Image (cartoon, rainbow, N blue to C red):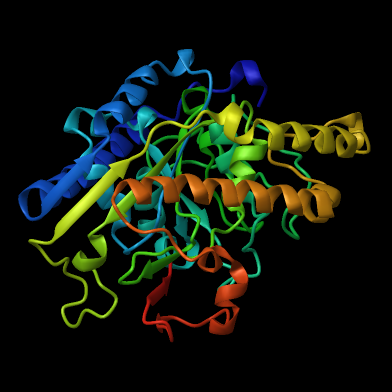
Length: 376
């Protein structure tokens, strides 16, 4: 498919179904937050102003990343119930999330529902050989944040399969849905292939796991968020957030019926100020740009597509150091919002991966430090 032939957006039935799904889930979340909970929302006016500036897709100049702590299995979508309903009816101006492949995409019905709900299928290393920092879904997220569309069919492999892209397939409603593959055999809608998805909004929980602890400390942040910041073009806007209370709604120690959210809990959702990304990450992006240019010169044609990395850009010491530093800066931005909520400073060691290695890679439930952890 040539660029001039490629559609601006998915089929009308798909867009309609997606808008309905997003609105209904948003309405249910809003009803629970404001009807069945004692909810406090801080910093919302500034965030809504940012969303208003992003209404015109063609006028967007950069993507948006929101990043927060992760305290319950209901954090997403529940926290987006904080948005007024008029914002919940416009999928083009709503978040894309990362959902566990082995939980959210196990059959056609679930895959369709979560795809309509703007969730990207993400493999967890614990459950899949296709997981990790360099899986195709991360490339999709980077492309959503960048200026698309991206309709490449010849990307270098991020999996044993020779391509990130699959042939076009029919969506449940009409033909012409562009797709990508996460493992070489499956097919999922490729949002970055459409003009109306460029410079989109991606929300990420960098802890990668639900973490519930009385002192409200966070686990270390994984490096996926650094890829979104370093590789998207241009650097997206970044809004840190802080969430409290959903851990009481769905605490990991809850008994039967576990699937029912507990009402009448106190919930707090705080939107931080939009970061000055040039000040916060400009030096790191400049270093990444120089490294990327050196590595690209050795690639076929002297160029790498957005989201595609050479082994040097994946594993070289300089690339690893950049991801580490970028991730720690993101974590500090979230901690700043945490401090605004009146919480005391963390012990610095809780932000290090080494602190949690004693848990083992597969351990869930109650930890030795009294926290509760769930892989999501």
